[in-house]
Length: 185
Image (cartoon, rainbow, N blue to C red):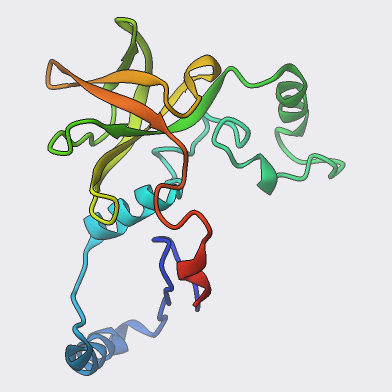
């Protein structure tokens, strides 16, 4: 299946479990001549942060709406009935109060993992949903739901990491390959 959750040209290979190890060995051996490297979950996670892909249970869940998560384009409010439709219609008419934002930290050594407070003018304005270091962009990245008034790219905030405040800025997303050219190869 040709899919990507990392913002790069990607494939998912599905096979019966009993063939999994042999499939891996075959691909690994064939890939050595091409510089193939094994990457784990954290590599996938940082790539998806750079591309702005949302993660269920972090950026997505029952506490957030598709409109707040920047996924309103994926919901057809013109459909006559679905669970939550009326609430989304009301929210769209009234306007969202908070929005999922991409943050980049000034200090690339500081890395968020989630649940860190995001402060503005000394007050808690939101919480980090997930974060990591973006190797392709050379920056520490975090996502957080912030009040709409703070959601503009360039807005300065601070993230509290282990009792210390770290400067951060709201960034336009995606940070990596905004045109999506890498997944269209």
